[in-house]
Length: 440
Ligand code: PLP
Image: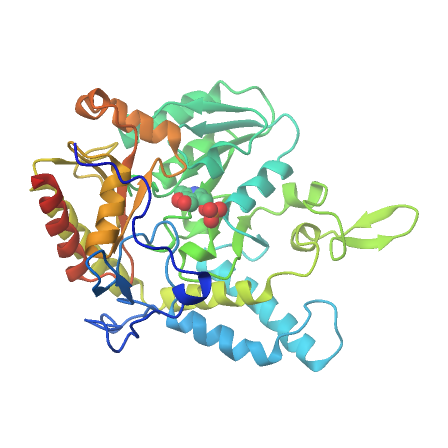
């Protein structure tokens, strides 16, 4: 077993110098390469230091945690800034422009998720916030059914929930949900499920799960945080009641997220936050705003975040074909390269052939995941994530099935995730690095 690193051995720069690197992009190798003709990200190949003193173009393989900003998003925010002003509060011209941009963004997001005209689109901070808002709004006594494979954002917010074990196949996911919903007490029911796993990238059968929910008089809430950066979603066509996602995973890192879906539970619930904006009138008693959006968006909203998010939705909507095709080729390259390394084992719930987005988790024999991630960063300029990815029960399940991982005492994994700025060179650098690590 190589020496444990546990922490970075490179000097950690002050915040100021970290953002003004010693080597400007123009001096770094492979500078600021923009790939293909579709949307482009800011900072692809930004130079980063490695242990031998060189700077190399960054190979960002950590999109699933937070994706870099799209150029189109940056431009939209820059265009909005001169008009930046209060939302829903001012009579001045710039307030009117900013308020209009905020409400237009709501329509853009509604269309991005295929929401019906009267669906609610509530702006939140992120997916975690969106799921907590929904948990706040479900009627008392609602039976919630959730798989243990969920990200904690979708696993934990519920007061009480039936947790289903990781299903062995997509069909088993559908039948397990059916059985659990059928066995739920009479009353409101909610099935919560992810669209694409943040651990394995595997796509869940959300259309079939929506049908099962409907047959059992239940609603379905879909955690789309890892789907929407990679594939379109259509709530109406799929029969989804709620969808949640985060701007920072969708190339819009300005702190906004979304809960979209049926308005009735949201309108009936007390405000998520109490304060200005959520109230219709305040005297001895308070009357809360009737619309789901107003009721749950108290305080001054994050208008730049929302404008950024809408710009990302527009840019992706115009480019799905090229984004998805490029990514598929890159994932194939990555997975076949990993499969050719005998000491690397990919984690998968449903096997090699299950359809998936560009997220791949794996373990390396003889290596602790933290050391792999730090060595990839410090020696190769590659950014990946290690750990249990805020999906502890799921990662334990996947590693529990892996005898070698268990016997060597490892309980974490490495995750490589791709996106719009990823190139073949990044994938090849990772594969070469892993082969070198395995040979040590
Ligand atoms: N759901 C999934 C599938 C995720 O991957 C994540 C983040 O990794 C979340 C929810 C939580 O997102 P956020 O941290 O933006 O709230």
